Amino acid sequence: MNHHSKFFKLPLLASGLLLATLSYTPPLLAENAPPTTESATVEQTQAFEEAVRKYLLENPEVIIESLTRYQQLQAQRESELKDLAISMNADQLHNDQTSPVLGNPDGDVVLVEFFDYRCPYCHKASKIIQALIEDDPNLKVVMKEFPILGPESVVAARAALAAQKQGKYAEYHFALMENAKDLSQNRLLELAADLGLDKQQFAADMKSAEIGETILKNRSLAEKVGAEGTPAFIVGTRSLSPGTSYEAFQQVIADIRSKGNS
Image (cartoon, rainbow, N blue to C red; front, side):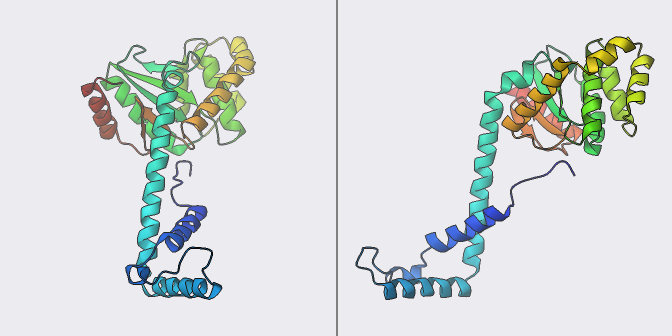
């Protein structure tokens, strides 16, 4: 599965448990807490640690509550950092000249998608993107080729960007999304011919260093803005979940327009 969350990791659990154990002082023990000066004896320290251990064993909910709170704070911090990274890289997300644009290039709201042609969730999302473009004449959709599922994904991304050079990106992109079971070199070339592309130029562009650099740049940008799987969506400067519905996209777009901030 491509789209995923990182909010629950073993290191996080360990950190939360340590935080709960070291930072929590039960009210019943506060008055008897050992001195923290250099005069504290080993016996007093051991007695205190044993008292804390006993308390936590008898009141395990304290650890659970502390861990839950710790996770919430970590998730909030990660979300804030991600939002900041998106804002700082908004120009590259929205206006990079090497990224194909669907819909209205001058649209007042920008939707960015990082995707892979071998990603089944991207196939489903593709239909939503098509519907949004058809129904919203002021929506700009920026496509970030982000092949992370193996060599076939990379070749398909190169082919789509080669089609862009001859003005047929949208047709080529949606054709691949409609039927991504066969991403062989022969099929990619046949599709180019079916769309009336110059096959010789197409084949040369597929191998070009320029297209390779575009893909590498997309990967670097994805890392900066926390797009770790596919599909990854950003509308304006808001990150949306991979499973966002058509209606949810519409609501976010309407909300951005109402605030005059794309």
